[in-house]
Length: 122
Image 1 (cartoon, rainbow, N blue to C red):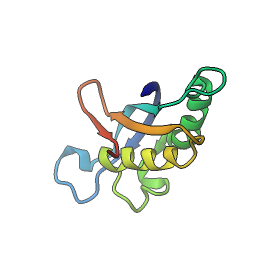
Image 2 (image 1 turned 120 degrees about the vertical axis):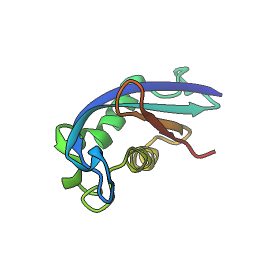
Image 3 (image 1 turned 135 degrees about the horizontal axis):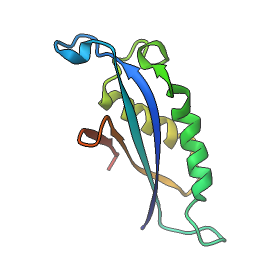
């Protein structure tokens, strides 16, 4: 199995609904997003997917959240923008647009250098 990944960063604010604590107030993060894909076969060029293509696909999904208040952008205008909900949304959206033969292995989302959450279907 071949695996490759890219990292992208967005800056965005959010607050957690129905939460007691400081995260109930609006605050921001420089969210790091790692997208890892996998494949058992290489294409005729000898690659899983071009890094630039994977970066464009990833940015197509996550870029609309850059420099936004997540609570004001669909689907997080209704869905609580927890790290868990955000990473699952990114996973589902990226998976839906990957080329045939390229499997989304996982998406990891960092709120900061020590707090992260990942999502993968196994």
